[in-house]
Image 1 (tube, rainbow, N blue to C red):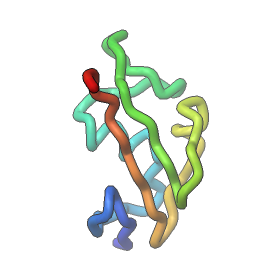
Image 2: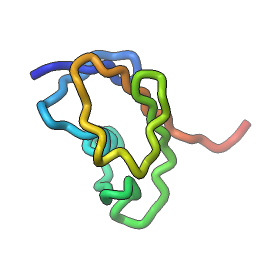
Image 3: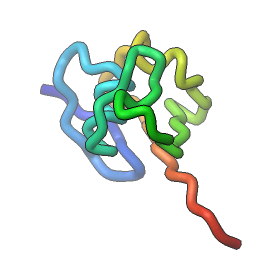
Image 4: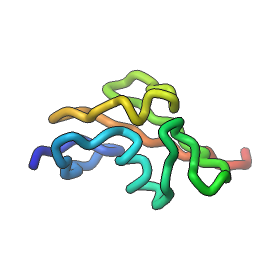
Amino acid sequence: MSTIQLNGATHPLAAGTTLSQLVATVTGRELLPTGKPADGGRLGVAVARNAGIVPRSQWSATELELDDDIEIVTAVQGG
C-alpha cells in the first residue's frame, strides 16, 4: 500500500483508488460517476490534485498515484 498527502497529512492509498472514491470516503457520502451525491443533496467541496483543480466530472476517471498531493476544501457559509 502506498500513500498520498491529503490536506497536509499522510494518508494510505490502495492501488486503483479514484479521486471519487477518496472524496466519498472523506465526506462519508456515496457519489455518482458525475461526482454528485447519490442522495441528491449538495456536496459543497472542491478538490485540487498537485495544485490543480480537478473538475467534478473527472473525479471518477482520475486514479490517484503515489505521492499525489490532494486538497479537499469544504465550502462554508458566512464571512
